[in-house]
Image (cartoon, rainbow, N blue to C red; front, side, top):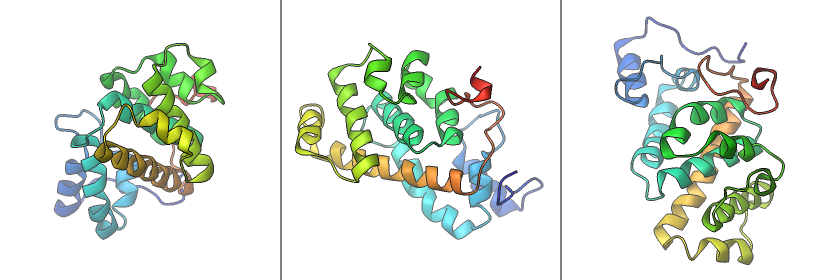
Length: 191
């Protein structure tokens, strides 16, 4: 049971409109529990929408790179909720394989999968350094530099911070996994 209960229908007209904006058009799922918790504070939800939607829908990073960073960042933060949502939807759509997704939750994702390109290895190393130190070493920055321009590198830094924030939120309120989400590797549901 989450510490803050997600809103349940029937929603007010304003909340209904806002929640529908947060979900992809034509989705069969109810609005995510994360979004329904956030709407306990509609002003905060509104402020968060612009950045979250911008990173997912209008970002400069290739979708596969974005999803790899999200998977590793949420895995490192122990956020099975957000990892599972992306692993079930956006990450496969972006081209990440089940093996790659499982590897993002491993202690050493580079050893857990032989399918990483140098660009992907640089992303994983950067996500780990940012998680551990809130900085990027010259080596990590240098590994990213051949693959991304300045605007993309700035977005990468914001993306990792944003999903760390999302992990704080989901973990802090102890959100239960979405029923359709991919099970976080190593959990009972993962088998």
